[in-house]
Image 1: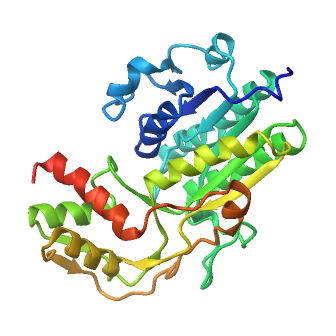
Image 2: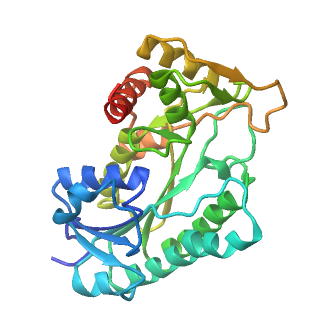
Length: 315
């Protein structure tokens, strides 16, 4: 049996301490994958402390990046580590490029040298130009900020490693994620915590419609891509990961008021022109090729998310 025929058994995961990465780590372990976690020694591991005994860990600030490849037979790299800033300042540029481009290219090079079967990458819908219709993978690109520009730039390296170096690269352009263990200042947790605590919250004018995708469904899409990588030819394959439905922020508030059985004290902002009034994914390619589609409705996903924050706040 040659290396290309070997089933995916061991996954190298970056970003495992983050919101999505922590949940994907748990999903991978449930599927009996062996996982090597790449992190920094100073990383806050609160989301995965209960899982650390089940994985191998390599701290990139203490050991060479090549160490996990030398000590493990890595079959698949899943690269979720990122440095996100909606608006950046000059001092943050270097770290953003290091996290969003340089680290990934170094991993691609090591993966190629060590005959890794697949490289899965997390990108963002912010790479697309504004549109009044659903976004396809070949829709025009116009990065929203430097973060999105860096993610799109990294995709060009995946093109190179896929076409010229024979690496099977798969990019997930993720739309608006939410779910348990997210940062409390993000939109959905802000609204939920306002509902649970009765605290007033300030939001935009609320008409913008976004494609909200539950974190559990995003994790399932990566599991589907691992399976897809076993049969597809080396190239750079790109998939939109969303729901194909868009909801306004006002609609999100209304649904959460129903779930929490309370009126949320929202101070709505003034009406103003929105750069992206509608963001919605065309997920037909993911449905066809990955055999993936989200399992959760918005209501059921928000209900699960509320349950998590209710446990955390003991309300």
